[in-house]
Length: 273
Image (cartoon, rainbow, N blue to C red; front, side, top):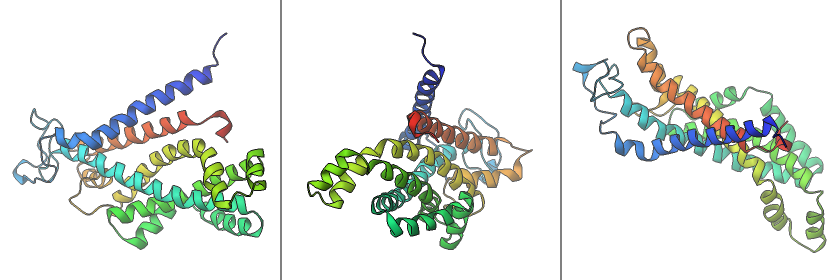
């Protein structure tokens, strides 16, 4: 029997996304130990030096090794996006599951608040949060979490409303199981699959959002290697040394695409809108 092309594409997306994401993680974990150059070392006499054997991507406007800064930037990008999504997912899932299980006026009030947040563009929410909190790595992660929170709340609430009608939930309730037991043992456990794929999808978006905020000066303080701030600094030399923009831009594109493909490949057909 001929396989459906959509199934073949799904496996390819999952495989490609997994490989790209694995490369990102490997770069963040072991890349800094492989790159011998110091990403913070300034050599003004070699500013904008072209690529060479010792410096494959050349140097930036302050004479710092561009390859080392791009590799170290993977660690910063992964840390911020991971922490941000975990914070947003934790708060959103807890609220969504509670609202979907409680029902009634409590669900209506909680979800109307979420709807208000969803009425604004996600990047705008992150921008407002980052502006209020101020620049910094942790503050940027919190802003990214605020950006992801409403989506997780909506998905978790929809999953809970569906799952709480299942017979095993009704049976557990009739046997005297506590709401907390049902919450963790039945609802969260059975909603884990779609939420995991959503986490991977949101990490890709969060990575791009965090870099955008860093580009605007709301990211980690200088001289921390960060793709967004590298893009901001490199745009002044776009025509003179385009590699200053191409290196962090390519890393950001590759990483975001890999996380998106991984999340999309993990989704089941019934999870799609």
